[in-house]
Length: 237
Image 1 (cartoon, rainbow, N blue to C red):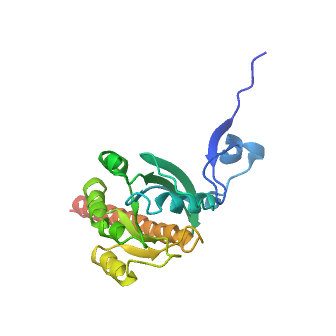
Image 2 (image 1 turned 30 degrees about the vertical axis):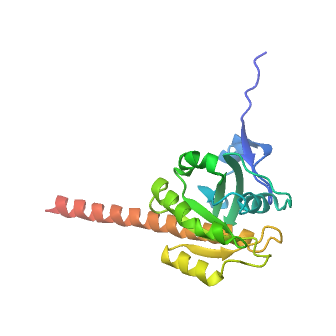
Image 3 (image 1 turned 180 degrees about the vertical axis):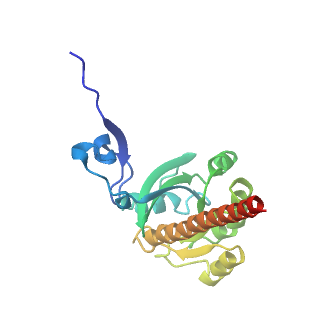
C-alpha cells in the first residue's frame, strides 16, 4: 500500500526566555486554509524580521552574561571565557513585528581578534559593551567601534552598553553619554546580575530597527511611484 505523504513542516519555534531549541510541527493545511475549506486571516501573521546582532568588547566585560540573561533569563556568577564566537537566538514582539535576534557573542581575547571581522560581516546591529568598573575597557571601545565601521554595513545600528552597573563605577556615565552622542549611538547602562535594563536594550534596538525598515519600505514605494509617474508622462506625450 502506498504510504501517505506527510504534509507537516519541521520548524523551530521560540519560547519566552529561551533560545530556539523546541522542535514543533506545523501542518501545511492549517497554514494554507485547505483544511475544512477555511480561509486563513493573513493579518494574524506578524512580519518576522531576522536581525544579526553582534556583541563586541574586551574579554571579561560581560558580553556573554548580557546575552545569556536576555535569552535564558539567567545569570551565572562564575566567569566563563567565550570561544571565538557563541550563537544564541530570541524573538522580540513589538507592534505588528517580530524581531528574531540572531546574537553573535564574539570573544574579546587577543588571540581571537583576527577572526572577529569574519563574524561582523552582515550584522545589522551591534552592542558595544564595556565594563563600568574597568576604565581600560572603556578606553578600548574606540578600537572596537573602528572594527564595526570597517566590517559592517554603513547603516548598522549600535548601542553602547555599560555592563556591571550594579557595582561602583569607574567610568563616569557623562563621558559614556558624550561618546555615544558623538558617534551617533544609543547609550544604556545595564546589570546582567540584577537584570536591570537588559531586556530594554534589545527592545530599544528592535524599535530602532523597525523604524529603519519602515523608512526603507517607504523610500522604495516613493521611488516606485516616481518611476510610474514619469512612465505615464512619457507615454501620454
